[in-house]
Every structure is written in C-alpha cells, then in structure tokens.
Image (cartoon, rainbow, N blue to C red; front, top):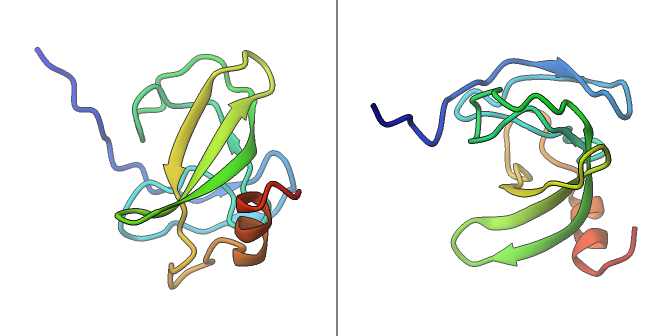
Length: 109
C-alpha cells in the first residue's frame, strides 16, 4: 500500500526554540515557528510526524520561488538532515516574520 506524501497536521504548538505559542494556520500543516522560523525534525513527509529524531531544525537560508513564494531551508542540529518548506508570510494568523525571511534571503542572520 502506498503512503501519502502529505498529511494535513495543523495543530498549534509551543516553539522549542523561542518558547512562543504558535497557532494553527487553518489550511495546511504549519511546521515552523512564524516568529523565529525554527522547526523540529518530526516529519519524514510533511505532516506525518514519523521522524524519530526530534532535533531542532535551524533555518539556514531562504530562497524566493516564483511558484511557492519564499522557501525556508532547515538543517537539523541533532542529525544534520536538511529539509525545506514554504513560508507562510501571507497567512492571516501569525504570518511568518517577513524581515527575518528577507535577512535569511540575503544570507544575513
């Protein structure tokens, strides 16, 4: 049986890096903090929460993408795995920190 590559898992959480409360987006799986852009290594495929690592994922760079807006690249501080996700800078609830996204795009954090 083939497993879906995306599972909607849009629950709120408390950021493990900055400690702020993060609300659900309401339309997709929010996997990073909109305040500091850090994430946790909890997914193998988006939303599945199947990764056993659990390490903090540091935002290492942001790239503009014509189709997806900004894309945030993360690296796990525990195991070194890298992943990327679409930024939610236009979200109605807790949009991503646009000035931090721009600084990461310029390579200045």
